[in-house]
Amino acid sequence: MTMVTLLLMQAATLAAPVDFDLRRLPPREGCARATGDEIVVCASPDDSPRHRLPPLAVREQEPLLPRAEFGIVGEIRGAVENEAVELPGGVVSNRIMLWMKVPF
Image 1 (tube, rainbow, N blue to C red):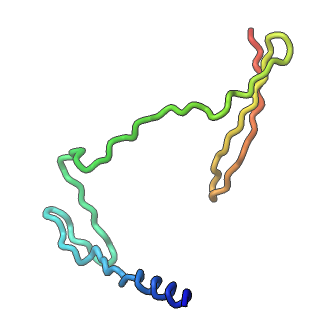
Image 2 (cartoon, rainbow, N blue to C red; image 1 turned 90 degrees about the horizontal axis):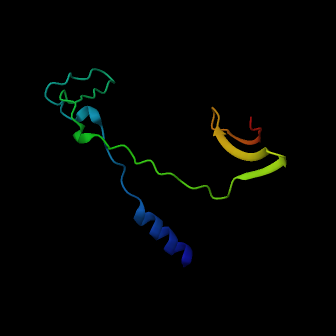
Image 3 (cartoon, rainbow, N blue to C red; image 1 turned 60 degrees about the horizontal axis):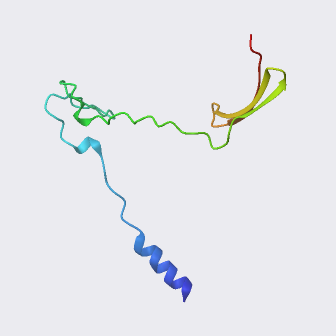
């Protein structure tokens, strides 16, 4: 009985595919007509920002952990940091950085 209920619920959520084709829309005034498989996108000549998204506000984040910094000898200090960089192909390279600071 549970399996039948689940199948009926799944069948009820299926929707007909949406038939959406940009080639059937009428061209805007002043835009060239598309030929073949082309899609023409027209911009406003006034270059107004009415349709542009505003830039996101930059938020400074405090680190989750304190900086791993330590004294070595005298005024020489050492630090350890890590970073992750995405390489081409979606591979993530995790790195460890060792720093040594000598004041002069």
